[in-house]
Every structure is written in structure tokens, then in C-alpha cells.
Length: 456
Image (cartoon, rainbow, N blue to C red; front, top):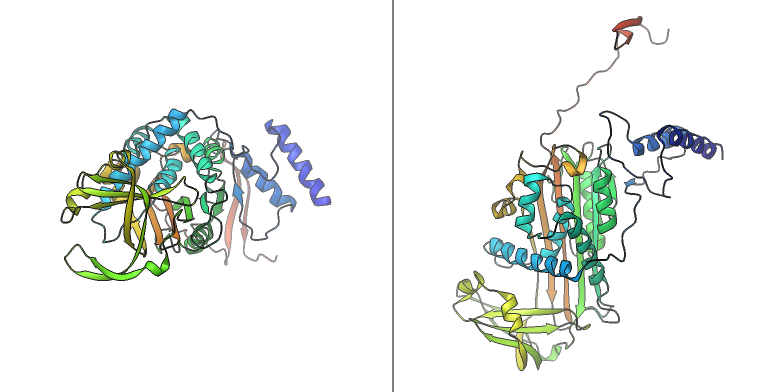
């Protein structure tokens, strides 16, 4: 009780001095820094909590976040949602064509990547902001794009009510965001407001400088939990170091049953032709049903609905010998618009694989190089131009079988200082030393001394 009284008295004194508003329970509001060097309000609160003994060193992670709650019913015009979705599709195609030579199998979540980079875009300014918007096809201004992302995420979260998952459990489409900042680094309140209101994310404080490996493990553990252990080790060793100051993460997990499951008894081994002309034996599923289907423009297309009938998998099969030609220029919107219901005998393989990619070089080549260079302007994050994106890391998993589909993806946007601070100089007062107490403005020496024996 004495500690509580002591803390409340200190808080009252601080509020009186600063004219501070009431504080939301369990939240710390980080205001924009005023005069250079002035103690921020949250730092002052934390200091008072520590000095008063109210805060214990329990090892629990501190979270710094806006005093604002997430907007759970954003009023977003339909045209803004359409613009966001259209931009996401355009970015998805651009990135697919950029990655098509990465490896044999390819799988990624353009939504996860766009969402993670949208959080970064909230802190971008000037040329960096413009380049990111053009590359990511963000056609809405900042004040409308972030609420649109919020509205879209909330709408997606409502999918699958009463539907089944691939594994017999309920349908899941889970989307989560988290941000991880260097403890002691100042982040603008305006940036934290955007994260809180539109992405439901507070800032988890880690110590990248003292223990980057422990910080990396903490972030990867969160990703694993959000993706039901399907995305492990998202951030590889070395991606986080002493210069890291901020990591923005998104995780998405999807588990859904087919509306029309394949009968396992119909699955047979059959050859699957490889691009180089060779073959492998695949477990080929089969069924005959009415599906939305299209043929023409060098391919066949079929749409397989999931159990809730609001999500589907669209499969495109280029004509034999024309895969590369089709892949370089296909327009899925035109193909989907041309689909009609048809009776289809479908045979397709079971498959499961992972895909990992670092996107920094790719995104720079696609039109946003300043974000990864010394020209970066992320002054909306911390009020300086000291931060650059060092990497955008993406990993995805997909499994398709007779029952349905399980898919997961995660994205990490890693920010570093433009240059790592030098290691601290060692100074140990283990021998006689001199000291002075002075008035800095007048340079008046008030006291002078020497210590030859600290025990007197």
C-alpha cells in the first residue's frame, strides 16, 4: 500500500507539472518529443514507477502503445475497400512476376506483405512515401488507406462461421500484427496511434542492442504461435543485430475444408511432368462436380470453393508447352470474370511445401529503393531520418489434400539505424581518480576532489 501511495503521489506531481491528461489503464501513451532532450511522458512514468518500486523486475515484456483502442467498426467507403483490393491484386501480380525465377515451387501471401509494409508506410515521408505507394499500389492517401486495411482485416476475420477446417476442426482465418521496438528508443505517438487504431498492434519492447539473438527468438516464437507452428524461424540468424531498432510483423493462418471434398479412395499414383521434361510420381486426387470453369486464352481455369462458400482456390492450367509464355502475362481478373458453371472431371495432385524469400532487393528493383538506402525517410516513426529498412523477410507454407487446404504466411519488416553505434568504451574506476563538480553555463568549479581510497 505504501508503494501505491508513493507512486500515485509521484504521478499526481508529474501530471500537475506537465498538465497531463488521465492515463488509460494498462496503457502508456508516447507523445511526440517536444524540445530536444526533454524527457518524454512515458519515460517519466516508467522512471517514477521504477523509483517508487511500483514496477517489479518480473522479466515480463513491456508494451508501449497508444492510449487509443483499435477501431472495431471503421466507417470506410466501399470504394476505398475496392481500391485497396485492386491495389493488392496489382501488387500480387507484380511480385509474382518478380519472384517467378526464384525457385521451382512458389507460394507467398501478398496480403501479408502489403499489410506489414503498410505499417511501415505509416512512418514514411517525402520520396520514400511516394516510392512505396507506387510500388505497393497504395492509391489511397495515408488517412484512408490504414482504415481500409483495418476494415478489410475485420471483414476477413468474420469469414467461415460454422464452416469446417481441413483437419476436422473449425475453419480458421487468423490475421495478427505485432511490432517490436528497441527499449529506450523514442517512437512518435502519432505512429503508435496508427498502429493501435488500424492494426491492433502495440509496441513490444525488446533489447536488440544487448541481446539480438534473444529478440529474434522472441519474435519467431510469436510467429509460430500465430500460425499454429507452420511458420518457424521466420527471422533467420543474423537478420537482427545491434543496429536493429524496429521490426514490424504480420502473420496469417488459413485452414479450411473443401465444399466438395475429394474421396481418398479415388486418389491414385500418377506421373506429373516437370518443366525440364522429366516426371515424378504424384498422389493424384480426383472428383467430378459442377464448378465454375473457363477455357481459353491459353489455359483452363477452375474455381474450388471452400466450406463457407465465401473463399475459394482458383487454379490455372496453361496449355502444354506454353507455361512460361502464359506465366509472364496472365491476367487472373479477366479469366475469373469469364468463368461459368460446368461439369468438370478434375484430377489434381496433393502437395505440401514451404517457401522463404528476402524481399529487400526485389522491392528496391520494383520501385522503392530509397526505403533501403541512406536516402530513406521514415521520420514519421521516430522523428529522425536515422532508420532504414534492412530487410523484408517472408515465409509461407501450404498443404493441399483431399479434405481441404492449410496455409500460413508471415512477414517481418526489419528497421535498422543507418549506421550501428560503436561499441561502448570501457572505463572502470578501479584506481585513484580525480573529480570536479561544476556549473556548466558559467564553467564555475564548485567542488574538486580526488579518490585514492573509496573506503575512506
